[in-house]
Length: 245
Ligand SMILES: Nc1ncnc2c1ncn2[C@@H]1O[C@H](COP(=O)(O)OP(=O)(O)O)[C@@H](O)[C@H]1O
Ligand SMILES: [Mg+2]
Image (tube, rainbow, N blue to C red; front, side):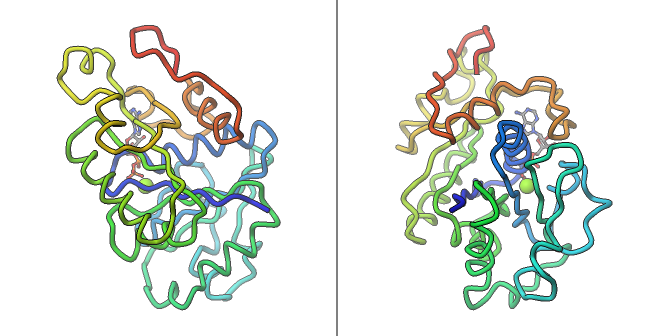
């Protein structure tokens, strides 16, 4: 039975899609059968980040509404054998996602995959709720900024409302020098503010701004998160200049 993990944040642009793609790639490289579902309906980009846009014929709405067989809509990644992608539709039709249809689809896919990662939409509205409602647990991506921390807190409350108790944070875009100088909240401040355990820390890197999964030069932060998702103990980075994410 596959585990369903939603990647959410409240705030947009904090790195959900990037994290989803790269953690999925690392899990798949380890032989875990992973499905990434782009739940950013109306703002699709996971297909692009994973380099499968030209293969995307059907999408999540087609699969949810039964317009096509879900396995027809799911794209096996051309380069990473255990990785598959279900793209989002370009337009959001709320009625497609009513009446428990997303839950039925995801439950039907649990037998086919070991891990299903849901790349959630930004915000806290019904669109963002699609991934939050159907997951078993969540990763909340947070940047070291007050607005991102506040939105992460709102996202945690939204998950609690949906009855989800299992959640962890990933602190993205870490700049150890800025943290040391007190120019932004540090990782301890963020954990204390949110009272949620941490599953990973990812540095801010210029190379990540355009990276595609599988082509990220520094894969360690994502490999560590993938290992922790598989219950392997990997110590957290030391927040100094030595890169040990
Ligand atoms: N740690 C990082 N360092 C540098 N750039 C990053 C990092 N994480 C994400 N990005 C970049 O930030 C942009 C927004 O990330 P994205 O994953 O699309 O955010 P979201 O899905 O939360 O809206 C993308 O161009 C992505 O490559
Ligand atoms: Mg996104």
